[in-house]
Image (cartoon, rainbow, N blue to C red):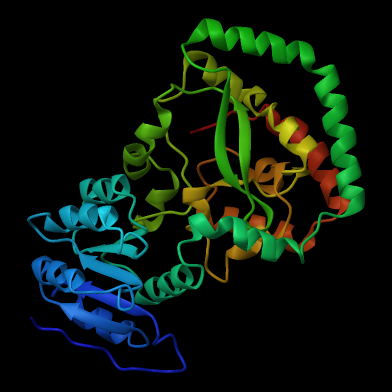
Length: 361
């Protein structure tokens, strides 16, 4: 077995252990990730044997695997996830091919990240550092939110405005709630409300409510559609994107198109505002799989501001295909740094015409 360890650097993350398998990208990885402690294996089989020899004290923090032609890496990932000892390790797959089917398979296996060439080794290094620092952000989001929330509190005046608006709208719109609920039941099988986990202020995770506008199997179809029809993934030939917005989404029901175009599907979020999960104005709370992509120093700023029902993104270029991923991130960061009651009032006024803006995607 041909194990090789990269240079040890006590001042730069050398405590992080990486078990690596592959030959095509080996030189790039050893040079670009020299601050990590890397154990190299030439083949998937060698990596499998190496992992089988580890104890609870030597198990790697990260398992970094080049996708092989035979697809043995996918079977190894499944084996790792079944292992009591290894299932806490971070798994990242690297591909020398720009093949959407490989990415789809990786997403289905729920690996922590996937990179296909060409990719920035600096981006990979920053991503691995983040994942190890927070040690699998998904199960740790609650702990992280407690730490961040002690510093970032919603202003008292903003909370009062939220309560006034949410209570009054819930009262006056109650007949519309009833009509929409009946229409959803008549249109398609399934529940009236759709509930999902979203990440808001300070990485706080909460139950996010909408009127159901999609088929009941929508979540199962997302992995495939996000690789084939994602508006943001097509920018600049990028192999992956932080945000997911599906072009001509086939998961939406007949009534769902109307609910989305009129923004009526968003009305149940008034309950989230009433509960304090989010505000009337802020950065949109993101699904966990999107929040995990926005973890660099540059973009995590968006989570340090309030989460909201509407915001700068909605009133500036909502639904337009020329709204790039970077533009949307910059708007979120700007609001997190500059939010105020006066800015909120301007956004609320601008939201009314934005509600009737025709979506292009």
